[in-house]
Image (tube, rainbow, N blue to C red):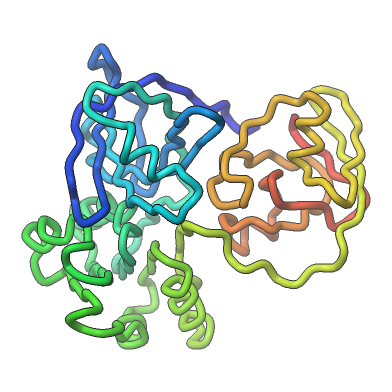
Amino acid sequence: MTAPERTLDLVVTARREEAEGVVSLTLARPDGGPLPDWTPGAHLDLLLGDGLERQYSLCGDPAEGAAWTVAVLREPGGRGGSVRVHDALRPGTGVRVRGPRNHFALLPAPQYLFVAGGVGITPLVPMLAAAEAAGADWTLLYVGRSRATMAFAGELAERYGPRVLLRPRDEHGRPDLAAHLDALGERAEVYCCGPRPLLEAVEQHCERTGRPPARVERFQPREAAAAGADRPFTLVLARSGLTLTVPADASVLQTLRGAGVDVLYSCEQGTCGTCETDVLEGRPEHRDSLLTEAERAESASMMVCVSRCLGERLVLDL
């Protein structure tokens, strides 16, 4: 059964400008007490009020047990979360958070290529430290519009030297992703976070060349494969004893909420993992942007905000 998520009331203890349009926030308990452990790749939900929730990667040091750090790009044309973070969160401001949660964990490997685009550097920062501590052979390829927009670029280059390849487009043009990917050994792992075109370019090259799939974290849902018309199906909730019908024009999440079932959710796009729910019987039609192909084949869980059923009946651990 999926473990319940923690909600904490924290306070902003520091705010720092990391690049043009990017601020980092340090969060701690008001009493300075310890925070839950986390691992590289984890992210938090910031509960910003009025139903506004957004996910941001932890980019500090997991060994710093009394503070968490996130970095946020201001996106005026976005859905409002980043603007509220930039405008409302200052040192001394309280903020409610949920998590941490990790769908982008760093697996042991002798070699890594980390590819970051813009603020996609955030989940990779603690991964670099972990790879370095493990003695792995690693390289960071970090692209952005200009150096001024690339958070943490200077300190990463100073700390790690030639392992960090900074490639602002106004100086270098588009990076040669193929050259970096083709230079990797067979046991190397590729981790990538950034805008959709960057992730798709990495994924498509791995597929064309027969490399194992890259491990990616997305800001936006990936483009869904063509699917047939949605149809109704039966939903059985094993713990609560309810049997529901999910209509063709509603999601599993909407059906659960309509029946008064308490289930956590946030993005409603299949990207954050908040609504991941264990599947006990049936075959989900996975439409999320998180699960790997192996996880989809196993179908031990599903994201109820977007995914549906391939058959007539699903049994969930709810």
